[in-house]
Image (tube, rainbow, N blue to C red; front, side, top):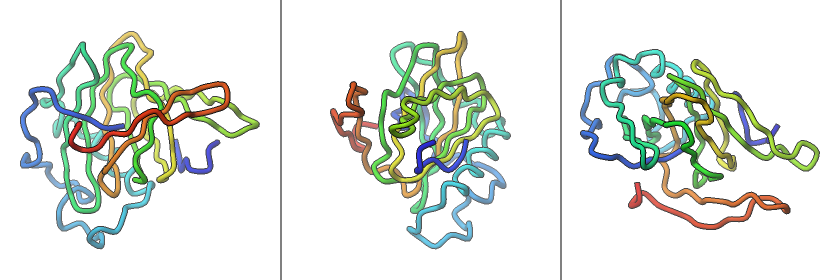
Length: 190
């Protein structure tokens, strides 16, 4: 298991309404008055709680979900100084490719469907492949690199939280010698 993994990706919006002003109801970790110091990153465990609680309340986000045959669809739901939350839909065959989170901590929860996560587990473990079914939440530290994909026969919907909010993401190719960085993107591409 990667030392950066604490427990069991980013977006752009295709014709989705701006949900930043949409009420998210009494989810204390998502409210502006949450008891976190401004700009202090949330822990992976706290982020896991945020996505898990939100995934269990589909009435807060299901009406926003769209499916795109071109690429994963995504929309930011929450933008705070110390964290952000994204809603992402995945059709069969869609994938993030190997990527990091620009030094942010993160977590994701599968709310509907099932995904697969690939990561490198170190020299003795090689490539790790995990099935991530609905109801599962995973959290990770700032150095974590993974590939998330929908290998199932139906769509999937996930919620992702990052702290601090994403400032960049690097993409990697998996080669015989390990991961090779190929590109970087910033918020202007999301």
